[in-house]
Length: 118
Image (cartoon, rainbow, N blue to C red):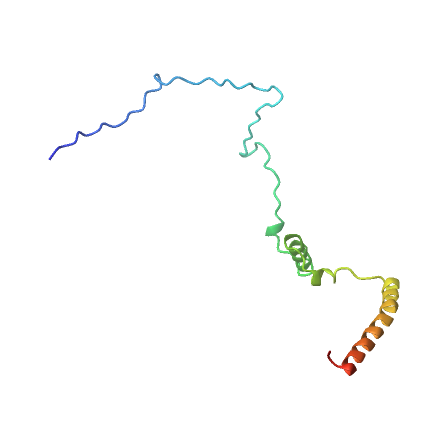
């Protein structure tokens, strides 16, 4: 049986052997680097939205959740028509207009029942 020769470990070249690559990119003087340090008594941390961690009162929480649901979900038409109500004058006008229409529809139905199918 043939014996294989052990391969040596790959050694990375030392720091003197590696040539540093110079940055050839053009540096724009308008944009300066301003690194931030968020340590104690250093740069201020950005403000965060903490509303999800607040325990909301019982009278506010349902309103807030309903608003979130309306934003996230497309509202079904049956629920959406309940969000918009008519004012009193328009409602009375539409009821007066629909009254005769309903009566003629009911009369047509009665005539159709008395005549029978076909």
